[in-house]
Length: 315
Image 1: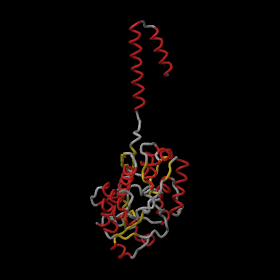
Image 2: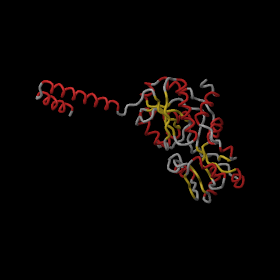
Image 3: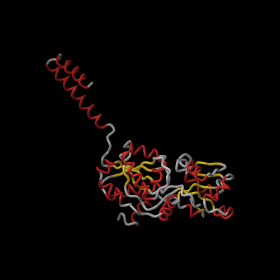
Image 4: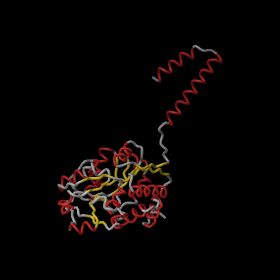
C-alpha cells in the first residue's frame, strides 16, 4: 500500500514543473514526516515509568504501594499504580503489557489461573506456578514474601463456643441453617466455594458475595453466620473471630510475589533486584497489623513506606 502511495506521488510530481513542483514535494514530505511522527508516538510506553497493578482490596493496595516505594527508592524509575477489579483483570493486563508488574498469590495462580486442585506444599506450589508461567505465558515469579494469606472460614467466638466447632468438618451439620459471606471471586473459583463444597460436602442456606471489606463487620453484626476470611486480615483479632481449621487441607498455600514478563526482567534488572528485597519479609502477624491500619483509615502508601523502613529495606 505504501509503495502504491509513493508511486502515485511520483507520478504527480513528474507532471509538475518549476516552483509548483518544489512546493508539491515540500508539502508531501511534510505530510509524510508528520504521519511518521504520529504513528511512532501512538501507544508508546514511557520507559522511565514502571506501571504497577494490584487487586481491589486492602492488602493488595498495601503491597502495590510497597512495590512502588521500593522501586522509587532503589532505582531511578518513577512508578504508576493502577487498581483492577480482580485476579484475571490483573493477569490479562500483565499479559497484554498494560502493566509491568503486580503481586500475585501462588495459590491463586495454581487454583484460579491454572485450574489445579491437588494440594502441594509451599515450595512445590511456588516452583510449579513459576515453571508453568514461564513456559506458557513468558511470565516469571520473583521472590515471595513470608506470609501465607490463605482463605479460612471464620465464625464469631460466641458461635464457636455455642456449637462447639473448631474445624470446617465440625461446621457441616450446622451449615444448612447458616448464611455464608465471601468476596465475589470466591463464589466461582476452583480453589473457592465449588472446590470446598466438593471436598467437604458442605452446603449453606445462603451464600452472599460482597466486598471483602464488608464481610468482617457483617459477621460481627450478625448479618452473616460464617465468613470466608483472609488469614492476614487484622479484623480477625479486632472482632474476636475464630478461624476454623481447614482439617482436610483444601486451601492451597497463598504466598504473594511480584510477577513480571521475562523480557521485562531482562531489560530492568535493577527493578527486579529492588523487588526481590521483599523476599521472605513480613509475617502473617505483621500483615494483620498493617492491614488493620489501612482498614481503619491510614494511607496505604504511608503505611507501606513506614513498614519498609521498620523492616530495614529502605532508609
